[in-house]
Image 1: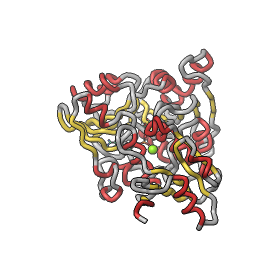
Image 2: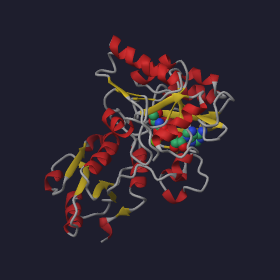
Image 3: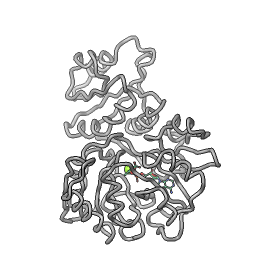
Length: 362
Ligand code: TXA
Ligand code: MG
């Protein structure tokens, strides 16, 4: 990773729903930084983003340097209003319909790009990814920047996306001009990325907050890219370049436990597996009586009643804290694949390098 030594302004917003004059002033400073070619990180409802002017090729290059990210991985361009995409993308009726139903929100639509978007932003592709976030700070920032904002997740490349201001401060202080904090991200996983396949058909490249079921309910035929759930299907030239990189991998080994057909409980299985190990482990498990049985360094519990959403919200901060505690292994139950579960599955299968342990087999 290259050395960068910037003095980073950090401003934390207490209540994103009630922006004070001082908050607005700080957001205005971040907007000016972006408009003038600098980099500012900001909260969204999915994960934190690292913003740059989508019209400035050298600002886009600076984003890749700050993150240590390969420059052929294209950036998502953020707008405050879905109609603003017309300035830089070939907008179709299908885009307008998706925008009306799901924007602002956790969905990103790939569209043919216009010339005003430099190829540095799109990793050389002729398409551009468009997203209109719902987070009040993100929307205010884009408005105040006065330009569309190219922004990847605000993590160092190879780390889980940041879901709190603290994650960003730890990854990017000294590497960017400003960090705006605005609490924890509601979803905790990145937006759904999709391409339009026809008037009423879309193809999901990366699952996220706008789920397959939600799109189907809105009358769309939805296909899901094979690479979403099958690591082996990530070809040399995937549709979404980001899919080919090793993502979301913590330093600890992630062990996914498929509890289907297991006669033992999740906690019992973890304890049996850990008996033979010397290192310490972390466990992500449903809140309830099982966690009391676990003998390990850290237990992260999610709500079993809202399993998919709650796992999504917890996952990245769990992976990061497990690394902070320097555990050797993290046990996670294999998530479901319905609703938001598909996004959780997509991320954990990558973090685990594709390995799934099935205690029911023995
Ligand atoms: O929720 C999110 O989407 C967050 C917040 C900050 O908005 N952003 C985010 O950006 O996750 P990033 O750069 O970490 O991931 C963008 C993904 C990558 O997998 C990239 O390959 C894909 O979107 N992508 C971007 N432009 C694309 C394009 N023109 N065609 C296909 N895939 C594209
Ligand atoms: Mg990312």
